[in-house]
Length: 152
Image (tube, rainbow, N blue to C red):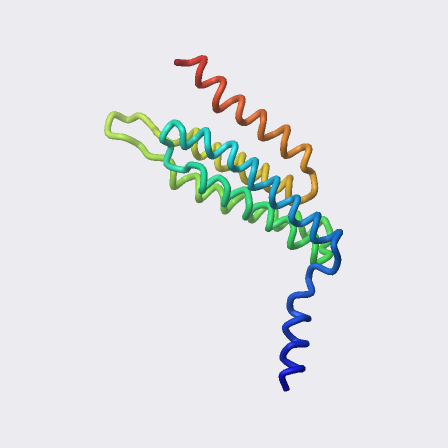
Protein backbone atom coordinates (compact mmCIF):
# COMPACT_ATOMS: atom_id res chain seq x y z
CA UNK A 1 0.00 0.00 0.00
CA UNK A 2 2.75 2.52 0.93
CA UNK A 3 4.56 1.77 -2.30
CA UNK A 4 1.38 2.46 -4.25
CA UNK A 5 0.90 5.77 -2.41
CA UNK A 6 4.52 6.79 -3.05
CA UNK A 7 4.24 5.87 -6.74
CA UNK A 8 1.07 7.95 -7.03
CA UNK A 9 2.76 10.93 -5.37
CA UNK A 10 5.71 10.65 -7.77
CA UNK A 11 3.37 10.56 -10.76
CA UNK A 12 1.48 13.61 -9.53
CA UNK A 13 4.74 15.58 -9.29
CA UNK A 14 6.09 14.43 -12.65
CA UNK A 15 4.89 17.45 -14.63
CA UNK A 16 8.48 18.71 -14.83
CA UNK A 17 10.08 15.82 -16.64
CA UNK A 18 13.71 16.86 -16.91
CA UNK A 19 16.32 19.49 -16.07
CA UNK A 20 15.69 21.40 -19.30
CA UNK A 21 11.99 21.84 -18.50
CA UNK A 22 12.78 22.82 -14.91
CA UNK A 23 15.34 25.39 -16.09
CA UNK A 24 12.91 26.92 -18.60
CA UNK A 25 10.12 27.18 -16.06
CA UNK A 26 12.36 28.66 -13.36
CA UNK A 27 13.91 31.15 -15.80
CA UNK A 28 10.54 32.30 -17.16
CA UNK A 29 9.01 32.73 -13.72
CA UNK A 30 12.13 34.44 -12.33
CA UNK A 31 12.23 36.90 -15.23
CA UNK A 32 8.53 37.67 -14.68
CA UNK A 33 9.12 38.23 -10.95
CA UNK A 34 12.13 40.47 -11.53
CA UNK A 35 10.38 42.60 -14.13
CA UNK A 36 7.25 42.83 -11.98
CA UNK A 37 9.51 44.00 -9.16
CA UNK A 38 11.06 46.68 -11.37
CA UNK A 39 7.68 48.12 -12.26
CA UNK A 40 6.21 47.59 -8.80
CA UNK A 41 9.10 49.26 -7.01
CA UNK A 42 8.56 52.40 -9.04
CA UNK A 43 4.84 52.44 -8.16
CA UNK A 44 5.56 51.80 -4.49
CA UNK A 45 8.13 54.62 -4.41
CA UNK A 46 5.38 57.11 -5.28
CA UNK A 47 2.91 55.63 -2.80
CA UNK A 48 0.62 54.00 -5.37
CA UNK A 49 -2.04 51.58 -4.12
CA UNK A 50 -0.47 48.65 -6.01
CA UNK A 51 3.24 48.40 -5.26
CA UNK A 52 6.10 45.95 -5.32
CA UNK A 53 4.37 42.79 -4.11
CA UNK A 54 1.23 43.36 -6.18
CA UNK A 55 3.16 43.84 -9.40
CA UNK A 56 5.37 40.85 -8.67
CA UNK A 57 2.34 38.64 -8.06
CA UNK A 58 0.58 39.90 -11.19
CA UNK A 59 3.66 39.19 -13.33
CA UNK A 60 4.19 35.78 -11.74
CA UNK A 61 0.53 34.81 -12.12
CA UNK A 62 0.39 35.94 -15.74
CA UNK A 63 3.59 34.02 -16.50
CA UNK A 64 2.22 30.92 -14.84
CA UNK A 65 -0.97 31.16 -16.90
CA UNK A 66 1.28 30.96 -19.98
CA UNK A 67 3.62 28.24 -18.68
CA UNK A 68 0.78 25.86 -17.75
CA UNK A 69 -0.78 25.63 -21.25
CA UNK A 70 2.69 25.19 -22.74
CA UNK A 71 3.38 22.30 -20.36
CA UNK A 72 0.00 20.78 -21.15
CA UNK A 73 0.75 20.90 -24.88
CA UNK A 74 -2.12 23.21 -25.78
CA UNK A 75 -2.38 24.55 -29.31
CA UNK A 76 -1.81 28.27 -29.83
CA UNK A 77 -5.54 28.74 -30.58
CA UNK A 78 -6.36 27.45 -27.11
CA UNK A 79 -3.60 29.49 -25.48
CA UNK A 80 -5.05 32.63 -27.04
CA UNK A 81 -8.27 32.02 -25.09
CA UNK A 82 -6.24 31.74 -21.88
CA UNK A 83 -4.57 35.04 -22.76
CA UNK A 84 -7.96 36.69 -23.31
CA UNK A 85 -9.09 35.54 -19.89
CA UNK A 86 -5.95 36.87 -18.20
CA UNK A 87 -6.28 40.22 -19.95
CA UNK A 88 -9.94 40.58 -18.94
CA UNK A 89 -9.23 39.50 -15.37
CA UNK A 90 -6.41 41.99 -15.01
CA UNK A 91 -8.81 44.68 -16.16
CA UNK A 92 -10.94 44.01 -13.10
CA UNK A 93 -7.89 44.16 -10.85
CA UNK A 94 -6.83 47.45 -12.40
CA UNK A 95 -10.33 48.86 -12.06
CA UNK A 96 -10.05 48.38 -8.31
CA UNK A 97 -7.13 50.81 -8.27
CA UNK A 98 -9.09 53.64 -9.91
CA UNK A 99 -10.95 56.13 -7.71
CA UNK A 100 -13.06 59.16 -8.58
CA UNK A 101 -12.50 61.84 -5.98
CA UNK A 102 -14.98 64.45 -4.73
CA UNK A 103 -13.37 67.20 -6.79
CA UNK A 104 -14.14 65.11 -9.92
CA UNK A 105 -10.48 64.18 -10.42
CA UNK A 106 -9.56 60.58 -11.07
CA UNK A 107 -6.74 58.82 -9.25
CA UNK A 108 -5.16 55.45 -9.96
CA UNK A 109 -5.23 55.31 -13.76
CA UNK A 110 -1.46 55.04 -14.01
CA UNK A 111 -1.40 52.29 -11.40
CA UNK A 112 -4.13 50.40 -13.29
CA UNK A 113 -2.23 50.79 -16.55
CA UNK A 114 0.93 49.61 -14.79
CA UNK A 115 -0.83 46.48 -13.56
CA UNK A 116 -2.08 45.82 -17.08
CA UNK A 117 1.44 46.26 -18.52
CA UNK A 118 2.91 44.07 -15.78
CA UNK A 119 0.52 41.27 -16.71
CA UNK A 120 1.52 41.57 -20.37
CA UNK A 121 5.21 41.47 -19.40
CA UNK A 122 4.57 38.39 -17.27
CA UNK A 123 2.69 36.72 -20.13
CA UNK A 124 5.59 37.37 -22.50
CA UNK A 125 8.08 35.92 -20.03
CA UNK A 126 5.83 32.91 -19.44
CA UNK A 127 5.67 32.23 -23.16
CA UNK A 128 9.46 32.17 -23.39
CA UNK A 129 9.72 35.64 -24.92
CA UNK A 130 12.04 36.93 -22.22
CA UNK A 131 13.78 39.51 -24.43
CA UNK A 132 10.41 41.01 -25.41
CA UNK A 133 9.40 41.03 -21.74
CA UNK A 134 12.60 42.84 -20.73
CA UNK A 135 12.33 45.46 -23.48
CA UNK A 136 8.66 46.08 -22.66
CA UNK A 137 9.35 46.40 -18.93
CA UNK A 138 12.19 48.84 -19.57
CA UNK A 139 9.92 50.93 -21.79
CA UNK A 140 7.26 50.83 -19.07
CA UNK A 141 9.79 51.88 -16.44
CA UNK A 142 10.88 54.78 -18.67
CA UNK A 143 7.28 55.96 -18.90
CA UNK A 144 6.64 55.56 -15.18
CA UNK A 145 9.92 56.85 -13.77
CA UNK A 146 11.66 59.09 -16.25
CA UNK A 147 8.55 60.84 -17.56
CA UNK A 148 7.31 61.39 -14.00
CA UNK A 149 10.55 63.23 -13.28
CA UNK A 150 10.00 65.43 -16.37
CA UNK A 151 6.58 66.52 -15.11
CA UNK A 152 7.77 67.50 -11.66
